[in-house]
Length: 434
Ligand SMILES: NC(=O)c1ccc[n+]([C@@H]2O[C@H](COP(=O)([O-])OP(=O)(O)OC[C@H]3O[C@@H](n4cnc5c(N)ncnc54)[C@H](OP(=O)(O)O)[C@@H]3O)[C@@H](O)[C@H]2O)c1
Image (cartoon, rainbow, N blue to C red; front, side):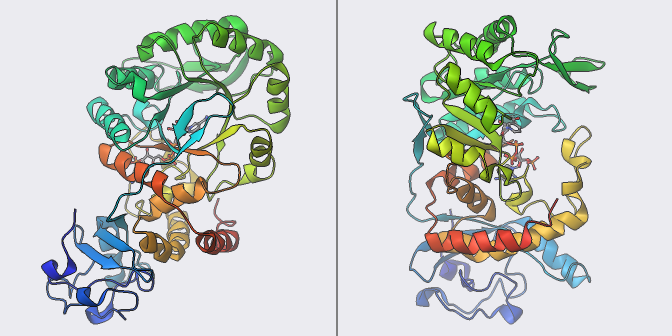
């Protein structure tokens, strides 16, 4: 990927110390391989120009490759024009010798899934301002090629579209995939618990769609048949109840799921958006292998109950939205705008003020990320799957490039010290971020 700093005629950036622009192009050189400390030529003025590449060793002699992205460049320019006081850089890096994706069990099911899974919500387009089908297929293929075997989708993502795209993408590689989908959010019937109305459905449909939570046996069976068809397969590796339905006893739901397992239509059972008490009820009626919940550096409420509960009972915990829908990549700068229909347009978390707060938090992590030769987004994912009880992270990707970057986080080993430093920064700075 990258050329040596010597080849570029540039000066390597000290990986563990300085990640702000180097005045006059002078780094302090600490931790940088002697041979890579060359007088800077092309990079004197603009060391972080997008596309610039660096190759250096950090203090522990790990070999790093860093590539600068546009966002950092933009931040620098803004600063020059009197913009935000603290510019940030965005790096994408990788170790010279690629480590391997880690795999962990899905509860007691006997299924092993990559710690980084591909989340296919955005691929359905709905609530994400649309999606490019061909690029989505490329993203799925790239993820699989990079060692991801876990793909998480749901009928409601694009009202069938995400499952269809996933099905198309894995047609000739079904055996390489642990296919996870969901049930219980329905729009074909108005029974159960009303959840929300959407005026955006499949791109070709018009009008308002009412979505209900319903986990009754007949509904689950019908949904499974439709999912199998859309996914183009004869088995779902993991079926998860998407949101809990107060109108159906969990014992009835679980009974049906266990039957489906006996029939070979599904291989493992999970729940999502569930409480510890609800998990108890699932476990009383069968074998619960997975709990899927919102969890990231910015969303830590499950540290108190679900995570310890899952660890105790050997239930895999899937963290969803581990990048806080892109914010934790550090690539959502102040100028990023979102398409019509993209949920992030209206969310307070994506306000300009909040983006700055998050960039400041991420700045604290940049030395650690650089020390591992990874981006802050990869670090955020690696942090997520390093938390006690959190076995897997479902990371959404809309492009092959994103999918590859995210997959690489599944090979990262953070040290106890990294986790302590990050834990302190999160305690001190993340609490005030909505
Ligand atoms: N069970 C549930 O109720 C539930 C709820 C939510 C999510 N989930 C699952 O969890 C998965 C992941 O959650 P999520 O999609 O909400 O959020 P996420 O994984 O935190 O963020 C995904 C978004 O971040 C951006 N992104 C991802 N990788 C990137 C990279 N390397 N560089 C730059 N930007 C990158 C992309 O958006 P842009 O490129 O547009 O910026 C992408 O769509 C979902 O797909 C779904 O499978 C489940």
